[in-house]
Image (cartoon, rainbow, N blue to C red; front, side, top):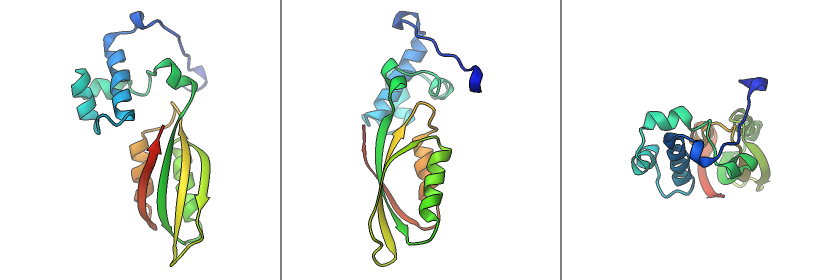
Length: 147
């Protein structure tokens, strides 16, 4: 939608039940009470197709006002440009870098901790982490915490 995108504030009683269930499924996934979309949708009694159809378009009011944070730790080969590639990948997924900490490489491996803000417009975090993990020179990737 780009610049023509419009947002509405609607009372809960006016929101269709399926959309409220999508919000609940997202909450279950974010809190890690369930690990998969299949588990989340089964728990709230909606189809996975309904979840995927609406997940990027419905947010609890507080979610749209602030981003969530995620902290990851990686081990990267000490190769020029590799960290830049990782940061570019994060930018393409529309996440916001909050902090970067890199150790001095030991044995050709650098330990890096990144703090990121996940915004409503950020694409799927799991896809982003998979894309980072597939990069040549990324030897490990671990989520340290989510808020």
